[in-house]
Amino acid sequence: MKRLLSLLLLIGCGDDLGWDQKADHDCPEVQDAEQDVADLDDTPDSSGGGDVDGGDAVDVGGLEDLGDVGDAQDVTEVVDADQVPDLPDAQTQDQDVAPTDIQDQDLPTQDSVSLPPECTEASDCPAPTPCVMVWCSDEGACQQDKELLDNVPCDTDQNGCTLEKCLGGLCLSAGLKFCDDLDACTTDTCDQEVGCLHIPIPPCDDNQLCTDDSCDPALGCQHINNTTPCSDGIGCTDGDACKDGACLPGDPTACDDQNPCTDDVCDVLSDCQNLPNQVTCTDGNACTQDDVCGGGVCVGGTVNCNDANLCTDDSCAPTIGCAHEPNLDGCQDGNPCTDFDMCEAGVCMGGTGVSCDDGNGCTVDVCDLTVGCTSTDAPAGTPCSQGYCLNGACSCKAFGCAAPKFLYSGDVTAGMLGGMGGGVGPKMGCATTDVLIGIGFDFSSSNKTVTRTTVVCGKVEADQNGTVKTTQTTTQKSGGSGCYGWDPAPSTPLVTCPPGWVIVGIEGKNASGTLFHSVSVTCAKMDVGGKPTGTTQTIPIPATNAAGGTPKSVMCPAGTVARYFETRAGCGQDALTLYCAASSPDCTGQPPICTE
View 1 (cartoon, rainbow, N blue to C red):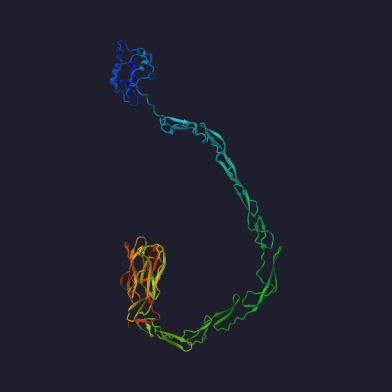
View 2: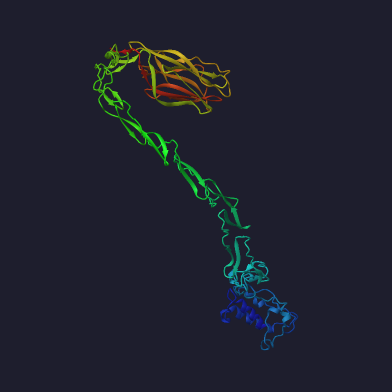
């Protein structure tokens, strides 16, 4: 019994891992405990009897001070007799306590000694065959299963023509590989090293020109009729070609040698024959006439090429016939207004001619075929070095004319009032004699937006002192609303610029969405040449006002005037775009307005 307790105490006095045992002198608690155990031989039982026998409980009060024995754990569990090792007779001959009595004692013990894990990952666990699945369990023990890989392909015989698969942990034969690729155009074999081989079969050539030979994977060799050119071996045919697998003759051979002096025939044995004849012909020489065939050749007489024109040199070229080359000989054209007449381009032309210029840019100088040179006054207003011609003299420093026509150049887009909804309407402009002088709108009282635009054109006139005035001539209306219609949208009064003024811009407000309202027109004073002088004024368009909106000003660039307007109409007239251009007067045929 003393030995047993000593053993237990020594286990408890080991290091934390339980692998090494310390000497008794390193564990003073054990030494004291052994002494207490030794005293057990003299401890009376609870009934006053003698020594402790196998059925009595052991008083281990003397072990109370062993609570800290060993770092691993306190030994307080009941010791199972199966866990106590057998002791030799020399060690147990003096003991009165049987092993069965020890089971009933509250004696200290220690867990079984821990062993290192068998594995930490699957690679630590070797597989006996490729068909056995191995793994490392969570407790660090190697595990295996011989059925998990059943029917999985494997390879142990290194033969590319056999099949193997796992069954019960063994790699077993599963027969030969099936190498047929179901392609009629290949020969299928198997090589032990590389496996299945599919070798193309030899060409399917049937030695027939009129078939295209190929191999179809499903059907094998195929011979498809073609239309390849060929020769049927018979004369007098051209264009022989394959059809339905055979070479068939083409069209009859054309034996025409392009010689009108032969009769052309074809013989199946000797092929084309060209026999001379005596018909009329053309020998291809433009310098001959009355040609007739003889001996297979066309022969003709000589052509007369004289055209009786002194301004040409006559000759004959075989390819073109008679030629009449213009010369530069002197001649007489019969015109009294020319001198030193010379041939030119086959015609007798006057040489340098007679000069009728009198040095006056305001006269028109001509030569009459019967009377010679004459001069007449140029039309009034003809441009000249100092201005304009008037009564045959260049003495008018003009700045315009009474009723000009206007020429416009350099059209530019000045800008747009409103948005981009709807389609583009027609351009609203004026004739070349007029300019834009006014504008008006149909204004929807219910929607508070412009629904239709009217422009006013005016004719420009100027008096001799340079005063410009404009007179209304025509009006033009735009397209209309696509949603609201015309009513109830009354027309506003047409607002026109003062006399002699022209439109150069518009102002207004862009409403929500794409519409506009609150429109004013900007006018500029014109000079007699139709250009703005720089003086402007803005005139509101009555009854076009509405609340809200963003102010927007659309103005022509400096030096330009309004050319035309363009509208866009959706649900209402959505936008109004102004186009401008530079204007200049055309005074041709009119008396100029002169400054002096």
